[in-house]
Length: 220
Image (cartoon, rainbow, N blue to C red; front, side, top):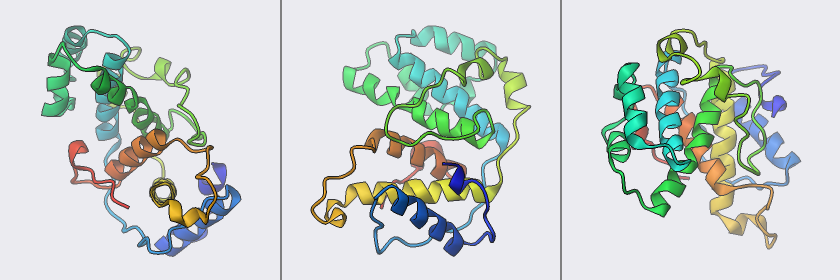
């Protein structure tokens, strides 16, 4: 993915889309012909991104067998409970989530992963063909790091890098939702839709200052 994080000559949406087209072509992914260019918007702050990482870690923890009341106790003790939306707080308070709900929460690690990329916890994103490996992430985020220290120490990638990544995931998602674009070919098995969706949601949220996490639309 380095090719879309480096060497941007001009920061405009046409050059962003041209870079995306190059990556799609290299990976044999068709481009949806009617996708509008993205619009520039104000990005979330590093502290807002850190707060969301803490929230997503808690949700992913539920899917991996952590007890909601213990997660809540930790969050309250470190002043992180307010980082979760009302819907997310209800999930931690609910001791009887269904298997489907837990499976849905397990994919939140992908949103967490791309948010960690946005603040340099990881340098490069792996291709969305399989689940992310978070081994290098966990030692650098809460609870391994105090929430107060974590929220106050992050720095954000350049706006064009983040928008470039969003445009790529926007276009990949559109291609996967429109099999007719593949002209009889099978949609690439080198793509995993759950990974694409979660990463795109995180990037859409980062690039929309006023939007809440639960309000993000993933239309194509």
